[in-house]
Image (cartoon, rainbow, N blue to C red; front, side):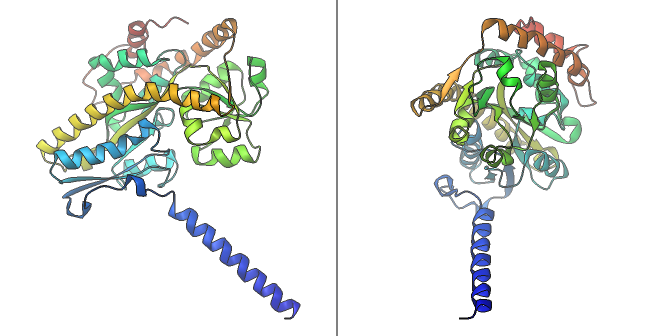
Length: 360
């Protein structure tokens, strides 16, 4: 065989391998273990719902639980075609599709939700809703919580309920035991206005990056760590590269489950009622399961050699005090009222702060 022919064969073989890998990647993660135990082709109503993360996370699994329970309660009239694993793209991209009606719903992370619903930024503010107990207290206050869930109504998007994925901290590639350590690192944060305000107030220089890009960025050294929760980092294998976790616990990570209103209004009233009630019941159950999952995932991570740290009490007070700037800078966005708001407080953020006992 001539050198020219050998080169051609080599190029063709490489091209073939590239195409195989590309097609495999395009196919996305296998969903066989989460296939419905029924034939969805007979459904009268179908909704495609997206999420960026892994359904092994209880807060993400909500989509499959909702699918199965709605099918049962509506006698097969509604089918939720659930697409986790960022199968439909990153959150900002999917939010735009949702608004346009190209898909019907999504479980959007609380950090990204502010792109269309600034009021959702309430739960990202540092040291306000910073524990499972405070989250439960907030949800139990119907007036405050319902106003919160109405944050995207003016965009043609209605809120269903929330599920969680634990307490935020820093997963890093080198030990991070002090604020000074953290300031030396390139820490990834979400594409979110509130998070950028928080890190600016803390004097950090974070890297804003879509979630689907994080794994490769860690492996290539583009970032030194990420702002996220132990549950997410362990299940999505971020701890393979970032083997240290600093437990800041400054906010609860949430998925806010939202639906395109135009699609929802195509459902008859009885199915709308079932849809809302089912989502509420499942979300409440999963929020309780999320507490235990965080404990379990931390223990698994520790057993695998991941080291966990906490800042000193004095340094936590510094973060708390500096983080209050984000509260002040985002107050106007959170307090803004829209035509569809039934509750019309003069200072919604202050009401929530007082209710939860926030004192920076």
